[in-house]
Amino acid sequence: MGLCFPCPGESAPPWSDLKEKRAKFAEAAERRQEEAACWDILDIQAKEVEKEKEKNIENKLLHLGPYQKVNMGGQFHKHNMSGKVYC
Image (cartoon, rainbow, N blue to C red; front, top):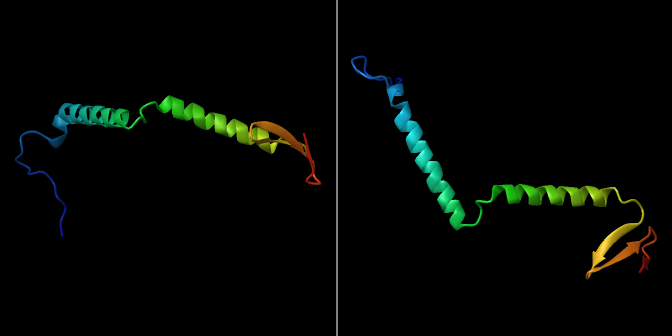
């Protein structure tokens, strides 16, 4: 078992193709973005905003207290600790 190193007589070091490598990475990134656009997942900012809204809703639900507002069929009802529903 040995380590693979470039030949000592090689004229150009492997890192000299850095510009080509970066160009290939950029092309691959563009292809991935195009594919993502086809699958409707390109709008990353919208996804982040949606996640933030979900977090805010969860935080509000956690901090409502004993009278929690629960969305039931489009109407909001108040529940107290005994389980009775007041409309």
